[in-house]
Amino acid sequence: MKRLSLLAIALCASAAPVHAQSAPTSSDDAAIERLIAPSLEALKAGKARQAVDAFLGTNPMISGKASEMAYLSSQIDSTFGLYGPISACQLAETRNIGAWVEQRLYHCQHPALVTRWIFLSVKGSTGWSAANMSFDDKVAEA
Image 1: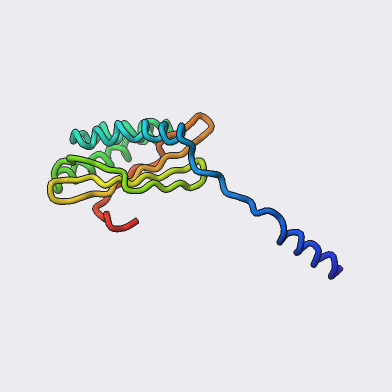
Image 2 (image 1 turned 135 degrees about the vertical axis):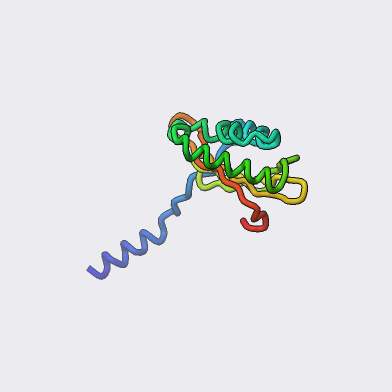
């Protein structure tokens, strides 16, 4: 019995490692960009509700949550009131969590402050869709 256990351990130790799914492909990258770009444009135009709808509205499971989307829009409007309009946004970081989840972090510039915007996209059987959109003023944090 001891011999069998040692053999099993040796076989498991020498087995090829299982690799996680690879990062999204370039066509996935383009699909994710098409999801996020209209939201960023709406943010730069000062249109909070349009920015929320442009991204989160692409996911039927989220677009039906009217009160949550309205709350996020009101928080964005409050941020515009506090920090002023967004003049520019730049991609600061992309984080792939396997082949089906990607998080993109953008820094957006207001007159006297930079805010951090996080867009989470997921790939289902029908393609890429929005999963979450958030923002804060903690640009130094990852």
